[in-house]
Amino acid sequence: MSGGQGGPAVRRAAIHEWLLIASIVVLDQATKYAVVRRLHLHESVEIIPGFLDFTHVRNTGAAFGLLNSVDFPGKPLVIASIALVALLVMATYAAQLPPEHRMARAGLALVLGGAAGNLVDRIRQGYVVDYVDVYWGSWHFWAFNVADAAITVGVILIVLDLLWPHRAAAPEPQREL
Image (spheres, rainbow, N blue to C red):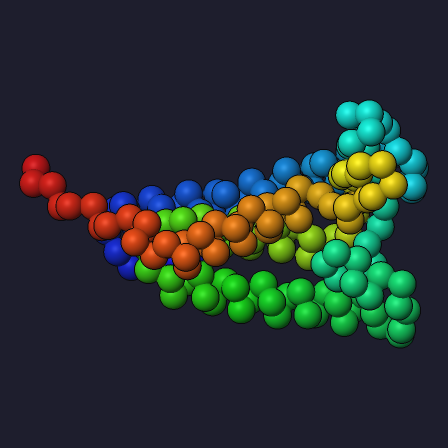
């Protein structure tokens, strides 16, 4: 996420951030592939009775199913373009964030990995594969996937960093060899 500036510790942190981003994308795409290969569209497998199923669904809209039921010409292209712009804005912000803000930087890496994972779906298919179906009785949460979970955890880390800025780690002291 950060450029080539800074010492070895900053470069190592940047490598870890890029590895986290890539890991989220790979894990997200692998789980979606497994769901598509094993479950027909709208088919469910009960994981925890009365609480959690894996249900293969397609989200043609935005986050939380917004615009899912709305159809207009070029919808997949419009939504993918908006997602790409949002991803680029977040990446630009992440590149400017000081290395001391480790929690926020980790959160941004999770958000970027999740956004990239879902963007791959939107570009490749015109929709995002969702499958984690959490429910209680007749109440259902929106179906989601690994990318969505990474985005959610990432946003929580960013908010925590904003609420408690004193938690940002101090720069590591220079050691004499």
